[in-house]
Image 1 (spheres, rainbow, N blue to C red):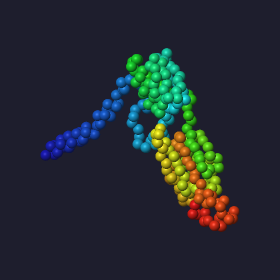
Image 2 (spheres, helix red, strand yellow):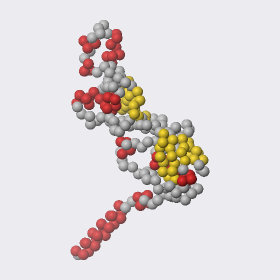
Image 3 (cartoon, one colour):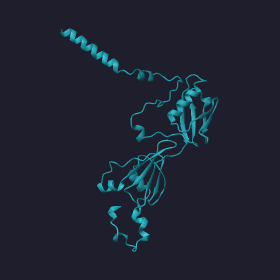
Image 4 (tube, rainbow, N blue to C red):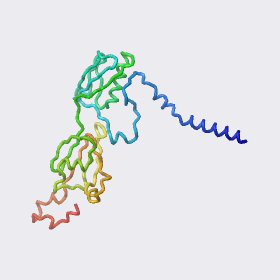
Length: 239
């Protein structure tokens, strides 16, 4: 009886392990048909990772080197045209705008794989749009700022000179582009975070983000009040 139970248990364990193997994961380990050896061209991504560290997307006006490991005679430097295309040696026009470097590498590997065996291609960006964010509204120095490293919204406000006396920092608007045609907006209560001395909700800025600090209500009507001492009539805590 014990031997029979042990055999059944071993069979059950073996079967469950085999059931857990994903055939698609085994297939993805095989080399691509283009023979491209560029790293990072796979589509798998850690959930939430690209939200925190988004990859750069190629834009019009960018320039990059295309280096062939085994066919240096195909090496070339190209610039993305206003319509998002580049003209590649021997294969003609290829649309590259909005692609990340791994996606671009795979596209070129697929295209050149039609005329050569197992191309190995490396992309090196030369001229490109440096990451930036835009500060607008009631900050001391509105404008476009270079985004170096991890910068939060409050740090971005500080880089723009801080809030002005007219700012409504309880309703800061953060705009983030989610596609070429759409952006999402979020209202962030910076005043609440600062008063509570809790910056756990302080969002990290991403390339291309724009935040707008609106004007508070009292500053809009201050010029119509009978006294220059606005605080006499209005409780600042309300705003």
